Image (tube, rainbow, N blue to C red; front, side, top):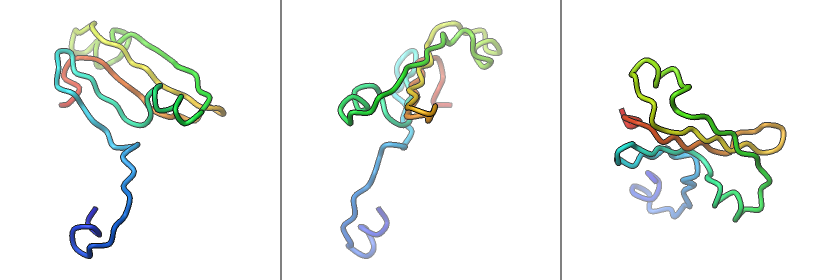
Length: 90
């Protein structure tokens, strides 16, 4: 992106591993691929889910609303993770 701004050299930016957070209640955060993108790319994956109440942060803050979802490719390579829970952007 700096090359585009300073040197005017066009480059493509890959936003796949850029983390983001949607400030709703509870908040939704993600990094990497989600199921829709993995399906579109033809990647075989499995989904691991855990309720947020089983997470250490949830226990420390007394929160029990939320879900953690991890997409894993073959050889257990992580593709992406999505987390729904309180105050994830902090």
